[in-house]
Amino acid sequence: MLRSFFDDWVQVDLEEAKHFSMLDKRLIEVGAAYGDLPAHDELWQAAEETRSSLIARLAIIPLVPEAYGLDTTPPMIEKAKTGGDDATAHILETIYRDEKRHVAFGAKWFRFL
Image (tube, rainbow, N blue to C red; front, side, top):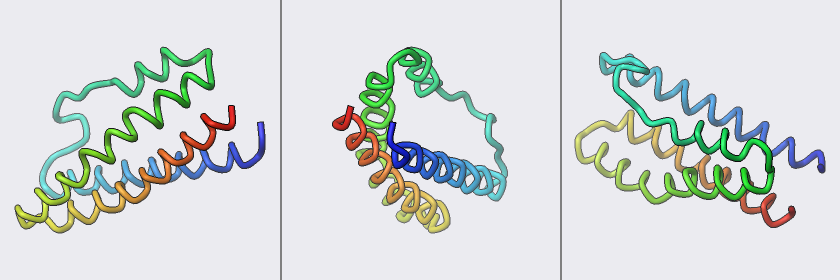
């Protein structure tokens, strides 16, 4: 695999860690904590199901849940702004911008393979 494949996914990993850190900090600011509410584990399930096929993983993870986030995040940003929560809106705008790149990386490498 080309070096740029790994470079792209390291960038994604760094941005995903940044997203978690921003959201974790924001939860603390509003009196909550990561893990307070039940959450799904669809991303982990997809990783497990595609563990033996890189092309399957590229078809699923960046092109389904990441792409879905591109559809759902703009309304969440507007809802945060309407509610006067500019701090959360800013975080979501950052995530939205980064997720566009994640989906593009997934599409690029899926096409490559």
